[in-house]
Image (cartoon, rainbow, N blue to C red; front, side):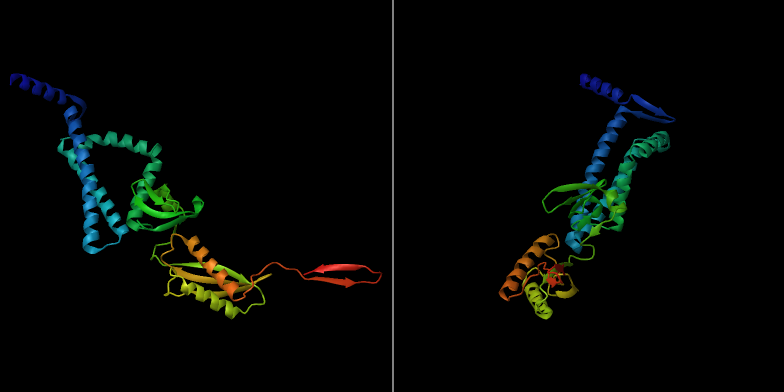
Length: 298
């Protein structure tokens, strides 16, 4: 028993050794250990509770997944902030004694952590303003028209999954400072424009009827709002039309919808004898005196 008491006394004295002193505040090894354990618990509990908050919101109110994620993340940040203050104050450390450390940290942030701070603040802006949210389909023109689905918004970066199933982490500042195309900002209904050209000898009304028939027959094209056809122009070798369709199922794969419609349009044009355009020239030969001739192309 005495051996244990001696051991405990030795440990207590070791942990009680002061390693930093400022005014009336002393920072010992025991305090450091207490702070480390407290910080671990704060981070662990903040993550656990934020998940419970998100689950409760989804189950009880059927809230949008992006909204629930934003609320859960903001709740976690608030919990972390309050928890850190409580842990530090419970050690008896005078927070005013940390002004020197805070000043040094501020200088470090100003010089070496600018990018991280910028991305963190941008992440807060994203969570509050919600220009993007979990589940949105986004496109970034400044990043070579990179497109994908938003699957996570963290403090520093946002993760999107492309159609090739590649996860890409993009700094949050890109979504605040650069142009972002959000295909799902209002709802998942998106309209795509599909150009179609036919020969000059074809009847525009017949072409319009065929295009609408193909569009309305496709299961991925919405009936409301319905498809429509625009007569765009008299081009050099063709009559140009634009088939406009709304879809929800193919918002993330527009090229597949376009390909499927083109296959059906080509099949219907072939069945009904609609001629596709091709470049052509009319050549006129004019005879002059002396047997010379000139070719004139139009």
